[in-house]
Image (cartoon, rainbow, N blue to C red; front, top):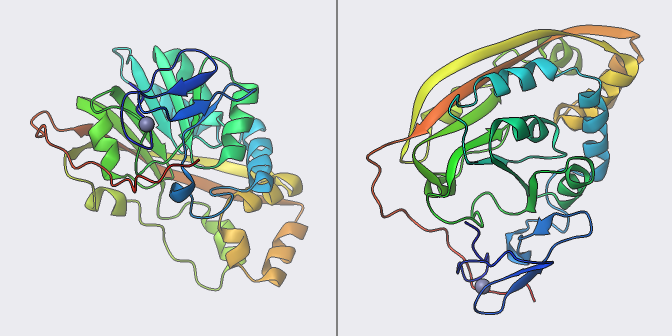
Amino acid sequence: MWICPVCRAPLSTEGASWSCVQGHSFDVSREGYINLLLVQQKKSRHPGDTPASLQARREFLDAGHYAPLRQALIGQMPTQRPQNWLDIGCGEGYYTSAMRDHADRVIGLDIAKAGVQMAAQRYPGIKWVVGSAVALPLAADSLDGCSSLFAPVSQDIVRVMRRGAMLMVVTPDTDHLFSLRQALFEEVRPHQPQRIVQSLPAGLEAVTQHAIRFELKLQQADLKGLLAMTPYAWKAKAERRMTLEAMPEILTQAAFILHILHKQDKYPDIIPQPKTSGVSKF
Ligand SMILES: [Zn+2]
């Protein structure tokens, strides 16, 4: 099911190094993850979340604040156990690790190596991959299901899904963390949870959506962690952020929309392939 990110030939995954017939090879790391991200797929030297924001995220998630979201995700996974499930944008693995018991094989993929490293160190039994979501290193029709939390949905996701396969997408609802954002900004712009289903790649259809809402009571340390893992912090004025962080406790509401999508049964066989420049990473 794996393909070479350079030439797109099948990858043999035996042993400590994965390779294709053209001789491109990729070493499995000490932690057990594999790096299939090419240099030209990176937009910066260390793409994705920074180690500091990943650490803040891990602490916040470990405290259980978003456990209701994780529970809701698991509750919506197919009752008929999927063989191959891919979580795109897995980060440090909090949500992906809960999917492990609900599919035969779970893959966590992220562009940020620091996140995949953290995930691989903590959660065995999952295939952890550093890779690109717009040119997935997976063969066509290889997945029974995918999830994409707070990440865009690329056309390439459709290519790797089997017909009828499920895709779960989570976006913030309009008023996600509203009171917190009110404290940070003069004007609070609502999130647009429908935008993602209004601009879906060809071949996907929206089936249902579920609102997931729960109260968050945050102490100072949790609040700092939450701010560090969201884009709100660096968009807000420093003085507003400092005032907020000085509050002993804040009450707010987490609000998400979980979209359930399917790959259309009659989607044509010929699917656009992502462009690869053919430049090797070596
Ligand atoms: Zn190759």
